[in-house]
Image 1 (tube, rainbow, N blue to C red):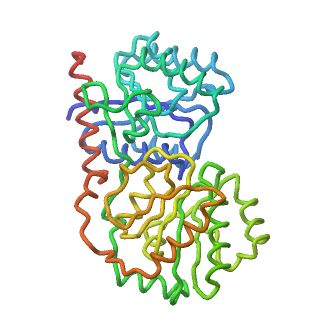
Image 2: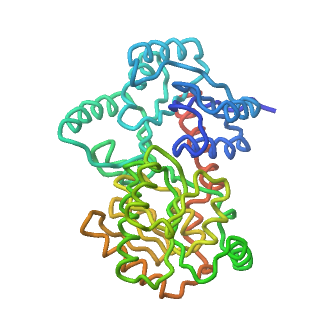
Image 3: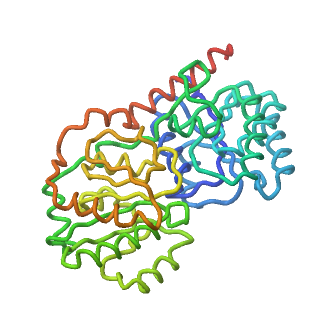
Length: 377
């Protein structure tokens, strides 16, 4: 049996429910069956159990200093690591605009394939835009490949529209589609177990941070309560983060504590989506949100921030709305419209296969092999 192709990925840390980290680990689990193994450069201690699991599955984990706090020690450590391990012919970097820092080290160390990967798209201050123009210049100069999770994220990082080519690639943020398929009998059993009867449950799956903007959803719930107090509308917030205490206090202040549940970080997201009736995502910035893919596969109508790329849409019951203090009524009325509309959650979604991780992992493995082959390795 031939040795697997080993790809070195640069992450911040290895943690569960870590967005980009979780996505990379999910791909790693799939590409292994195609003879492609992922190793990791991380900038701090992550979740020990999760790190140990990666090692047991054959991955290597290298520690370097924190890139933001110690950029020069980071660059030296990464350079030394790459020089000491010339077997790594591909370095895949997941730090958005900060990709320029490891790219300089990797180019100096002679790594032939240097992948810059964009996972986001958000507005910045004018001061930061100047710095990002400088970073973009270095990225475009030092990266051999420019990748992104969506066309919007591609243009955000690289400054020009995506065009398919030998060195540009959009890799979808993908899921195991079968885990999220709608099941009517299971939904009924789960709702009965939870004590739900006629409640219309809205759910948001996202880290509780200012960028995800859950505070806006609390204002929306207050608007629903004021306008339609008889409607049994509920909001479930799945996730945790720096904003949780503030959000909980806001619920008490607004008097909507009975409408809102904080579910924390959960491993049973497919079951939560089955019980829900509508998915909400009011983010100020997203690349291509996996949570929206999951919600659509589960057959949920979705109300999404206008900042979310339209590329993510593959079912008809979606509304893209602006966010802001004056937009709460707009969201409240859209929730009520969905609550009064029959939705066939078991309807076939042929476009969902584009987000199936089994399919995308096979394409990714082929892409890595193609990059190595093009450079004579």
